[in-house]
Image (cartoon, rainbow, N blue to C red; front, side):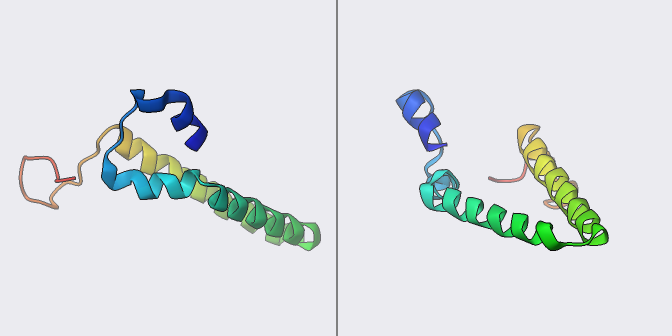
Length: 92
C-alpha cells in the first residue's frame, strides 16, 4: 500500500481518519508479522495429520469469504437494515 501511495503521490486522497489503519496494514512491521505467521503455519502443516489440515483449510476458506464480504459490503455501500430506523444512510 505504501508503494502504491508513493507511486500515485497526491493524486489519490484518503480520509485522514483512515491514515493510521492504512499505514499499519501497509507498513513494513505488519508485513514482517504476516510473513512470520505464515512461517509458523507452514511449520505446523509439516507435522499435522490429514484431518487437522482439512480443518485448517476450512477455517482459511471461511476467513477468505468473510474478508471478501467485508470489502464487497464497503464497495457497494451496504446499509444495515433497521439499525438506524431511518431512510437516511448510516453515518460514517
